[in-house]
Image (cartoon, rainbow, N blue to C red; front, side, top):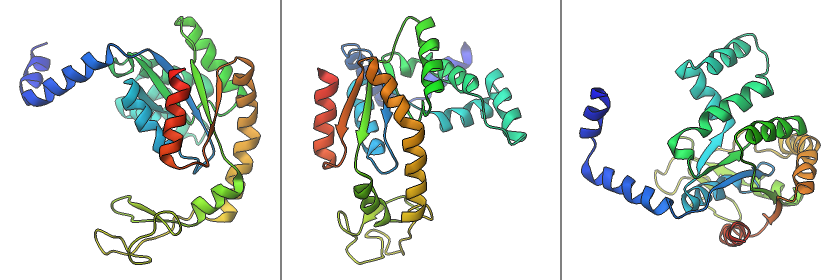
Amino acid sequence: MASSVATLEDIPSVDIMTELLRRFKCNSKPDKRLILVGPPGSGKGTQSPIIKDDYCLCHLATGDMLRAAVAAETPLGIKAKEAMVKGELVSDDLVVGIIDEAMKKPSCEKGFILDGFPRTLVQAQKLDEMLEKQGVKIDKVLDFAIDDSILEERITDRWIHPSSGRSYHTKFAPPKVPGVDDVSGEPLIQRKDDTAEVLKSRLAAFHKQTEPVIDYYGKKGVLAHIHAEKTPNEVTAEVQKVLSS
């Protein structure tokens, strides 16, 4: 106990007040448990932080949680590491267990956003079983629907500044000088994955795996289709309208 008090004493007062004010504001927010579904380039990554801040939710990305559990050497993390070392896929039960662990953190008190999970029908069913044991359920699944041809234009014309992560788009957000980062003047690159061929295979896998998941939640009456081809601000407005209804 003494060590946690000492740690708290080292935190600047302004940071403590900011966090207290944030938590006070969050108390009035409704609990929400959300899933974001959408192909690469559909804008989930843009909207997720906005939703997280608006509703005081935690963002649960399965890849990040697996790495954190392995690093922390939790019982589930140790099992996950064993599978990884053997070159095996981490089982659905393990991933759901790690989500279960993460949900108990104070940052997830008002709910969560699941991004990148569930990807298959079996995963969706296992997730629902786990939530049912806790007496909660998924409130809304946001399907970021967008035509494949629009995604191809979005992704294949995307350029990245490697060290900062700044991204540009030849058509929608071009750099001041073609091929050059606006801030540093360093050259931009295209990711190896940002090609029409790679995108086509990723989209084929996404549609094959995820369409049954979308149908599953549609039958449960919690699915909302988001018109992800719109501008980011228009998509944000649509998401806010769906979540406030």
